[in-house]
Length: 560
Image (cartoon, rainbow, N blue to C red; front, top):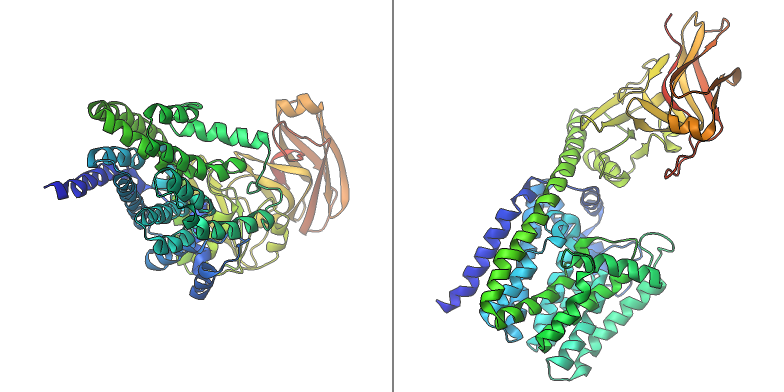
């Protein structure tokens, strides 16, 4: 029966984890995940093999061990999300098992080791790592690092070395593993530190390349070696470890009170794997704590070893309920985001299956957590066209896209949480009057327009649109939504309209509200016209980087 205690406890842990996180199977892909599925589908198997074996730094952030996951899953399951959730849960369970084996190797009994593994298994600071395949890089890096550590502890260093290589090829944080092995060798091992030199050689090879060949000069991936950056990161991660502000900074005291080198080693493991993260203030994500949190296991195991009853009470009464509370809030938010993403992708998939030819696309808005690369990859994935041009309506490239023939228009409705997708039919006549809505003909917007916001659309200081002038048109009208803040900050708003370069004059708005501005027209030929709108002064709202003109509700030739 004693031999069955480990497997039985592990099965019970896995069952409880799956029950608590069953909502993960109802979730859906994030933009990064769809992008990875699409992009890795284009990568040849030989590229994975060569980069996996290559000692060269990958400046394009290609991680062959991690990206191979998307390649295999994408080819086998497409965009069947529950399969991805099951795969990352399987990797997590393997990591929990490795944490248990490492604790046992360190001399903890089965009960203490189980307590330590349980703390690692149910830590909701890394909720995203349990629910989002985009963090499979962290899961796989942890798996190979923990496996390499276990093999080193068992004296199988020739097997530990390639596992370390695979860990780095999963995520760069693995570069700190040699330092972890050195601490183990000095504190808990045979003090034969020269055994770690091959690991340090590999770490130096990749680490120096990463520092001097990093192409990210001034963006969120840039390493920043400043006190302010370190403090910002330290404040964030120390508050995530135990769900309380700065609580993680008290862990060294807890390890000292335990008076056990094994807990000191666990704390060193945590600190060393956190170290590279302290120089990345532009990438603060709680899921990055996943591997460092393995260092909590020896501390929890030591407590269970010293006070078995107290440890059981803390786990049952405090730790698990606290984590379940964290889980509920994060689950609600994750499922809300997933519902929007699923609807967006499902609509694109259905439209692609209709068989209508699409060569390029312009999109107007997207779900709140679905960025540009998600929209682009979704369209290219379902249409199998890597060369497809995809532009946001406010992008300069949109004007060029509209000159094509087979164009898709995607308009996201945030209130109804649905996507309106239509194809511009070749030869279809232009509208003579446009009301800003999800059904507005985006192909007539030439330049200077931003995404739709409710029932209006901001223009820049200058904007252009193409309209069909009806025969006998006697007026041109622009309806603007002059906000109180805009009028307060600017005093007034002046709008000028030009038809085919000829000015109709300027109208002024000096009060807030919806204002209809109308210009009388002389007789002119019917047909397509280019309408240019110019506004002054330029409006720069606080907290908004855009230079804005007017919030346009509608414009065009009104029907008399």
